[in-house]
Image (cartoon, rainbow, N blue to C red; front, side, top):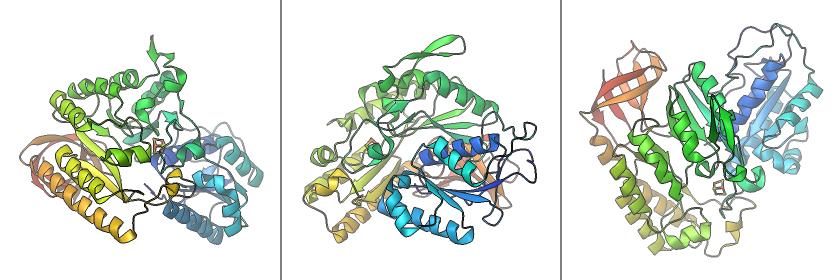
Length: 452
Ligand code: SF4
């Protein structure tokens, strides 16, 4: 969740003027924050700024922070401190920006503080420190903008904010209610990305299956037709593009069933990232989770009947206030039966400002730890079995990286950065972004090994 890119790792365009002002960039946080960073960088390059690869060469450094949990806040504050020590001229933006007082208390020398999605405010703060030098011949950026991800995959952010009010989460107070981008806009961006060589689109938002609710599913123009700003319609149109399409942050609302046939037909990847967070009805109620249904196991079974290849990824929280031994045992039983392909688990952390902090029955740290270890051991067993079933099969992979020792790839069932890998040991004759058919020869509890 908290990736850090060294300043300037992301320079990709034609050479700018050598005297152009230079901005260093540190990007922390989730994929949604990464997309914000890309937008700011795109705008800066469009205005003729250079992106500095190091602190020394930068006229100013922007730190895009994460404010999701306390450890992420501390990481952000440390990154601001490092940028101040190394460069001295620092502008802060992103989720932690809503806590300006705290930032200024710890780092009184920051030049400006702006919050999430305040692109205009960040850019204007940069203008104040180092004004732009416009030159129309060198200030052009590629039509797909600048990206922080490798060339062959890209995050596609379809909405901002969230209408839910999960009791452990402060994102709606940081980012506001759901604001969907019209389907035509999203599809045009997706098409530009694919035209620029992107082979895999990762659809992200806070609540992907709620897409378009705020716009009452309004139609917008795409190519020669009208497309509704609606989850299924967007998936169907994305499935027409020549790229893998992977869905993240999907809540199991009833209409999610509609996209499973698109997966079975190979139009979008057979992959659903659904943050279930728990299985006990009383814990889910206390969490105020959206789309909670008693019968999620039945739903999962029916999806698998329609699309046997479907991979399910999820995240869970153990040690939520009020979670009893019975709740936890129920979660383990559910996990054993659900046989999810990829799972992440967090120990509950009381985020400042979250409603859940007032729920009685705080779980002791040792109990959280013990539950976490039992949860992970249970899932490892499931994961090992599921991956061993793939040995001997022929599967499609996308190549992420190649070095002297071989190629690091991913299957359709693995999202970049969060899931497992497929290793092609000794295979150096392939290139990043290529798709290949390989035969699986070995598996452990996380990864696969294969041969061409
Ligand atoms: S769905 Fe819940 S956890 Fe996700 S962003 Fe909205 S409020 Fe937070």
